[in-house]
Length: 528
Image (cartoon, rainbow, N blue to C red; front, side, top):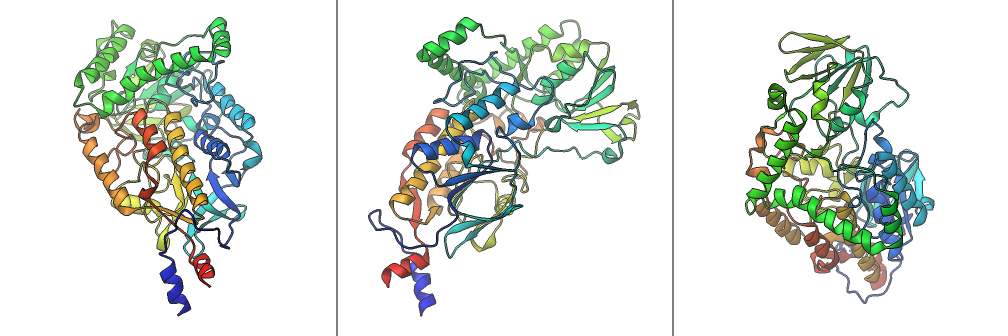
């Protein structure tokens, strides 16, 4: 009888005016996994709303995430620095229009210091597994430092976390130095070495021009060329930085202008392709002109470096010297497919073998893989692992963040979450969304917050309808080999909306789309 009563009471929903009950108390109200831009953004928003019972678990020994880990030569933000920051914490001191990576890392450190986040971080703690306790409505996190419980769990480890290694025969048998661009060995000197770079994505576009003058010889192995636009970079004059410090409105204006331009280039042209195909054609023309300007006398190189897919199918980038680097006497662009890595070099399908001392893998990251998003196993109701659910049933999440069957769980970079020209836009929106849920749960004395299945399904259906108008399914993207696409043929990285729409929804989406409940034990205690 008692068990039956508990089961019945498990389904009792709370009225916002009901009093607090004596429920099981977790170690922390909120646990955030990751102290990169996402984790810091969540922490700042929680503190802003007076929610202090939280900690951040960070497996490394410093904040910064991507900007902490990526230390390769030439690493820099690939959108204007004025856009790449939180709207509430703009930095007037960027040295360049496109700031180098160490300035982004220092920005992260200043955020953690200014907003009092450091005391909330436990460094050197790696989360291995998280399981939802349906009896007490809390998460049990198994870490390499022991068990931690939380009412709410936030996965803020990002997507560019786990390096993706190419599946090439013989890779493990190479006798020379091997480095992934995200695991750069700063102590290793490339000067005078024979070097090969596999990959021509955004990281490769930055590092190739930087290392080419120092190495004896550089082979670049390209599978798919990338759209590269001219980079309007340069030092920001001291007088401008001073003006930004004294007149905040001036920097706000510059930020809004830059954001509008970047959103047109990277978002509107992508998600509203059918409405404005001319915008994509415009940027394709800009890309061709950049290629021609850097290689005016090299038609064969231009042909190899010219993408055969539409602009926007994979993330474009910016550079003023990437293409021209291939005209150097010590640089060779190799477009023949790789057959194998030998102990001393690389053999291509045409039988040619090129000897090298160093192999650099600029092959990107795992993204929509069941062992990467999130970076630890998340077991929801009845023990179902989130990564396996997505792998079998398509990647989906309400507003890119919450999933039915996984109560009190929020993933910052979920399916269809990324929006706007800057990662910071998504972080601000999702941090607002989840902080509203935690705050509402407090007000209603709820211990369980779960998105309703019907609200989730309507949202997912709407996303799929909008996807039909995007560049991903209308502009020859099959030739792009883009990480935007998953095994299901979906493109679940980019949210098909503008940043303005996303932020409005985050601030005003109705709480009735969620079910707020208490633990069965608490409900039973109240009735007794």
